[in-house]
Amino acid sequence: MSRTLKAGLALAIAASTGLSTPAFAENDETFFRQVVGQWSGPGEIVAGKYKGTKFICDFAGTQHAKSVGMALDGSCRVGLFSQPMRAEVVRGGKGYTGAFQDGAKGKGLDIVSGDVGADRIVVGLDRKQLKGAMIARLADQDTMAITVSVRVASDLVPVIGMNLKRTGAVRQSALAD
Image 1 (tube, rainbow, N blue to C red):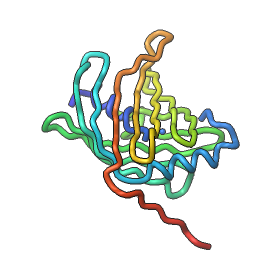
Image 2: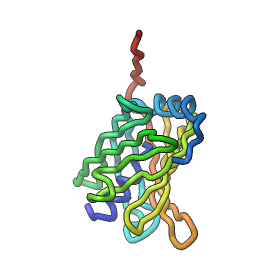
Image 3: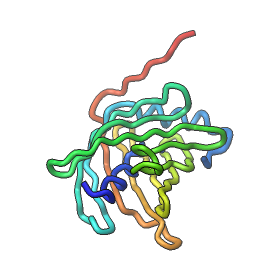
Image 4: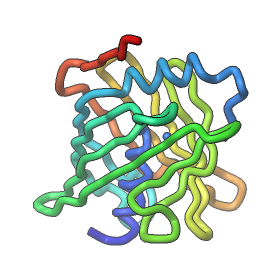
């Protein structure tokens, strides 16, 4: 897969992902609990050099073990070619941070900000000159739409769209004191 396609697909899984206010805990945890489970679905690059490229992704969403946040592990494939994907977003201080793949210092992207609601997350994305945003919205318990946009001049231009469906039952557990 091309480097641009890999970066774009990595952006998309962040649904999978620091502008929230201090009163964010309840909505944040509600959203992250709803993303736990197996997800699968098609996506398409809708702008740029690879416009029209279609792909399929499969992810496992888990709540972060030590902090408010989540991780997505899985892969995306175009034809016969598959690329492992990993994203993690956690609350730190007054906002959110995280990374896709190995972060901007490697071949991935950094999550530099985030705002979480009961049914959506919006994160700011950064890699050198590339600035953008990802929105993941739960239409219902089993459907998630993801849009990744990049900044071109002063506009955010959508470049990737995905529609994921839950492929298994939601598994949640609570620890008793």
